[in-house]
Length: 315
Length: 290
Picture 1 (cartoon, each protein chain N blue to C red):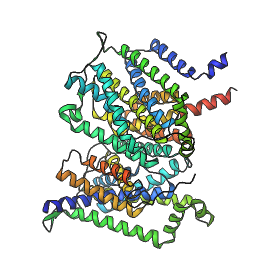
Picture 2 (picture 1 turned 60 degrees about the vertical axis):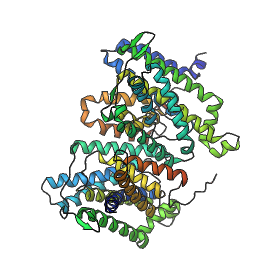
Picture 3 (picture 1 turned 90 degrees about the vertical axis):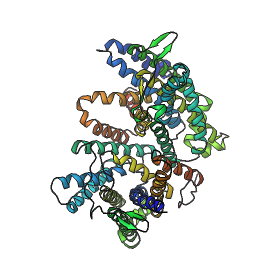
Picture 4 (picture 1 turned 90 degrees about the horizontal axis):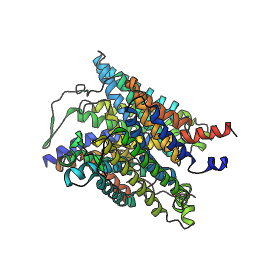
């Protein structure tokens, strides 16, 4: 019974849900609610990107572009078009999905470095549009975002955002875990291993890659919307190159293909600047160093490497 | 017409720098299959170290030499401590390692230097020279001739010297090269040193025209990368052509369309090229073995 529970695919998520539920008991100040919210939102985007990178094996160095689409949907929608913020979230997701579909169709034919540079170019284009179209987006200084109102309740309390973002993350993670085990997930894993072998087995490689791209774009957009709404402020940097790199790093640090790994990777990368806040000067030096060390010595990422060691230690 | 010529000159200058960055990418890519995202940091080191050494009282030529040495040491360290231990890692891992290296070098540079923009005086004055209907800065000529010297020097190195041919051999087939007694490790170190030196020289030459800061590396790396891609990854001549094209198109679009989207136009063209000619302008068609 215990063994079955331990091996169940939702077990890890259960542990994470427990940690999320218990953690606030030990929070010395409300600041930690905010940090938790930031971690959950980043983790949501990372879980989505993991569908593309870990599952389908395609790199995207421009995913912050979709994050930015979601963020600015909830910023521009309510401010310019008087759309309710909750509706703007869905418009953002639909927009990101449509853009991912249109961009992904031609781009996903490319492979390796070429795909990397094409997605990178896409991300830069989005952040450039957001920076330059100042009349709508407030330009490089960013813009304020109207608060999210759900059932007459204004969501602005830090604790409320902690629980709301945690709930969205868990739902997103459950969907991703189930996706991995679904026929679509199996097809994606097959084309990750060998596109030729997958095609021979009747898998429409181009279509499945596109499906993974669109799904990951939806996650990124949702995460972007939540980030903008919880901070009530947004700048084009959220769609920039560095943000894309952060997202990729979260997935790879945590371990490609592992949903829990992505969450751990996001938690690690998001909390690092806080832990290093006292040594702000060397923050970037350490960040670069840690990224390199993990990639060199734990090639599969933190979570899978540690999980393997743990399993070996306790047979 | 004079306007066109003016844009062409500044495009060529900018493009020569991208071409040098793209060449650096190509040398490392050929030797080790690594796309080095830290390439832009070599350019940054070139400009920043020269400025601070010069500000400390060291004459400019000597300061430039020191900057090249610093970049070479950084390149060798990158190869020895990050790329070599990661041999056989996946493409994504290697991309992230070099991005980590780029963040690391940038962070270190921020600690040692500062975050402000710096420039040092042009090598031979700032009086523009009239060419036909347009003008060109003496420093632009320095950039163009410097780039030409590097291109021809590299060509001679790879085509005429034994060491250059050894690097080419390692790029073509590492195992076969090692079997005939070439040390692949040493050749890889040499390519990193070479590519770092080229980057640093590019940084030194361009700084009097466009000021340098700790942050300039990222965008330069991206555009150099784009140039290398456009020309066909791994092809040195293609890298030069690609870099020049990116530079010229960028300046033309800035001049005729809008400066806001000058960085974007370069990427749009690259994406279009990749889709129409997936291996770049001069790349060979790829055949996959299953």
